[in-house]
Length: 133
Image 1 (cartoon, rainbow, N blue to C red):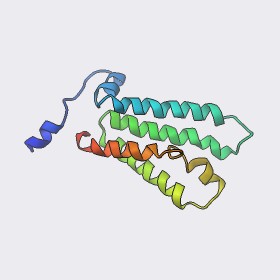
Image 2 (image 1 turned 180 degrees about the horizontal axis):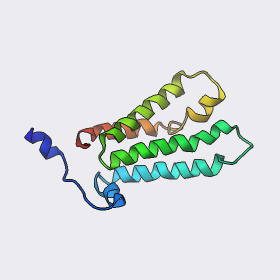
Image 3 (image 1 turned 90 degrees about the horizontal axis):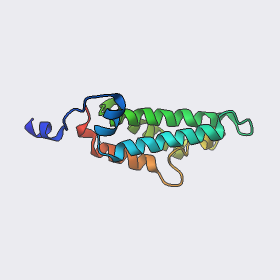
C-alpha cells in the first residue's frame, strides 16, 4: 500500500488548463495538443467540402473523441486512459479487419498511417496507467 502511495504524484489544484499541463509529464499535454491540431487540420480539410464523401466529415469528430480521451488522461482520470486505449483498439481493428469500403478508407487510417502513432500513444499511456485515478 505504501508503494502505491509513493507512485501517486501529489494532486495539482487550480484551473483546468493548469491541471492539464501540470498533472502529467510534459509529453502528455504536448501529445494532446498534437491531436487537437490534427483535429483542426482535418476539420479544415473536410468539413463543408462537397468534393469528398460526407463520411470524411466524421474524421474530425473521431479525432475530437481521441482528444477528449487523452485530455481526460492528462487530467489523471483513469476513464480517459481506458477510453483512449479502447478507441485505439477499435481503430486498429477497423483498419485491419473491416471490408474495403469507403467507411474504412475514411476512418480506418486515423492516427495509423504512415506510422501507428495511436498505438505508440496507447503504450505510453499504459506505462503511466498506475498513476491515474
